[in-house]
Image (cartoon, rainbow, N blue to C red; front, top):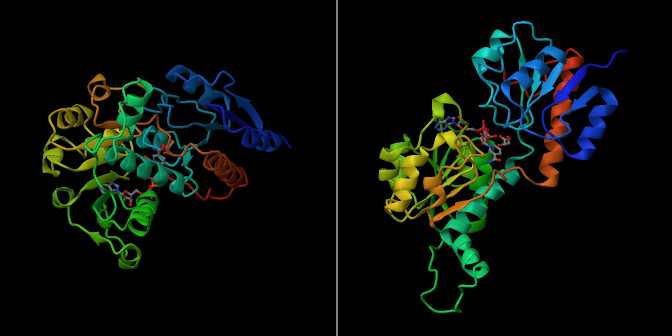
Length: 323
Ligand SMILES: NC(=O)c1ccc[n+]([C@@H]2O[C@H](COP(=O)([O-])OP(=O)(O)OC[C@H]3O[C@@H](n4cnc5c(N)ncnc54)[C@H](O)[C@@H]3O)[C@@H](O)[C@H]2O)c1
Ligand SMILES: O=C(O)[C@H](O)CO
């Protein structure tokens, strides 16, 4: 039997690439360079399946392929706001993602950012590495206590709930939630959490706010200058969701002029380009999109793509079909 041909847009963990090669006729992007729209269009014309990830901008330009051979985009990652839903539907493409298997690790990174920002960990490390530490003193790099404080979670899905678990059960935090739909009271009860009616009502009540909603046009600049003004002056914003969810210019202003105390970012609008206004803020902790970057999560994501491909080519609805 002829194996379906699949194109993988970036290098994946070796164990997953090996499994993929057993069942499919695989072509890898061996140089691991991010692909431009013409290369993505060629892939869609040439292979039965394209396996993209967050660095592939599958917008109107890349999906302008009237004669696509590909019938499925099996995305490596849970977020798929880099894929234009309307264009994918117009081409009749099935789109799948990789939920659940990275939720714990992404929540771990959100906790890391929260703790690092509150305890000024990046500032401390910079000081040490620059040879500027003059020793312990009672007034040195004073941060904010995290335990027992109030955490607002915007987007209470899989990762938002993992964040609540860590913050409530590990750090005794009070949890407030804002979600697009009503959250099951039994789920809220697990974290003694309260769902708040609106983002505007949530922000002034929180010491920390962590974003866990998807990106995409509907959530672009969900956190803007007006909403940053609603936060407490001693509060912190954490974003592991998508860069476009935060107006980065407004965030840089808020950090620079002490409208809020600090922030922690894992994701950036237009990444890997970094807004220079942000890079100049000392009260900002920055990580390079590390949410799912553990061996365990990255392998599980790849095997989850394989599950989706196996379903699709066996004529079943893939378990993680999103389009
Ligand atoms: N930093 C990373 O490496 C990393 C890793 C994984 C996921 N992510 C991001 O995290 C996102 C969430 O992943 P998930 O698996 O928890 O998704 P999910 O679908 O389980 O949860 C998202 C939740 O956000 C809610 N929501 C959507 N828009 C909202 C809005 N405007 N206001 C309030 N709530 C809103 C939805 O109702 C849903 O409950 C992904 O879409 C992805 O962009 C980032
Ligand atoms: O959404 C995700 O899974 C991560 O951000 C990587 O794409």
